[in-house]
Length: 282
View 1 (cartoon, helix red, strand yellow):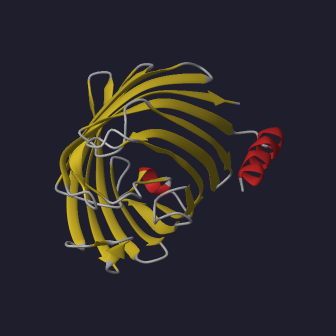
View 2 (cartoon, one colour):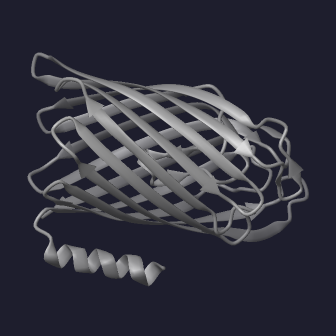
View 3 (cartoon, rainbow, N blue to C red):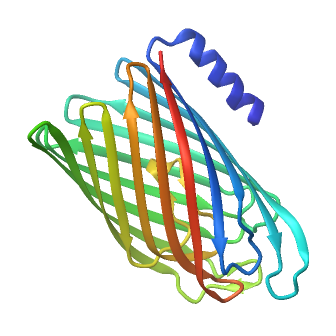
């Protein structure tokens, strides 16, 4: 699978006229986790190609997390994760876009290993400044499934020379099945709301976002990411700043999440991620 993704990236970059290569490196720190330690390293590669009314996105992500039992102080096998994703977007006309996505998980420890996430969705522009977007995702795991329904509305406006977008969204998550390994689900449905503000001033861009309400097994970033461990997230805050050049972009991003590790019944677990991302267009 990795060779297929990398081969497609190389082939696409040689035949496409409108292509963007992306790379992000992140450090993930945990506080109060039962087994996960600080300093997890994340590498994220993707390629975006636009051709007429078609848009293709291929991505690969690898995570490596050191583990140690917080009470027994015993070193545990590291957590090694790989994720592959594919997204296709078709512009039907000036107002309507259709989307499909696929994500595959390889995890050496979690029961969600070999999980597959399928997505369908679309967006409609009421005006140039107002649009509505809807998506549905089915996460297919060995012992249970997760259905997620997303709805987002976006409004664009300007203040002087600064372009702004405000996005409000809702995520409805339903778990179908009873167990994650030996853990029995006590809650199977979640409703999460959120808001995001994006500002673009000349060559600078920044955004802030937050989620309201608990969630689990959440599909994120338009179907290209998923939180596949049994973690019930609650508070979430995300900040991003960057600068765009003619063919090159650079971004810094910070995210904070607080939640509960469900199988371990461990409350107040913080997850902090600091990342730097680069994009090159050609």
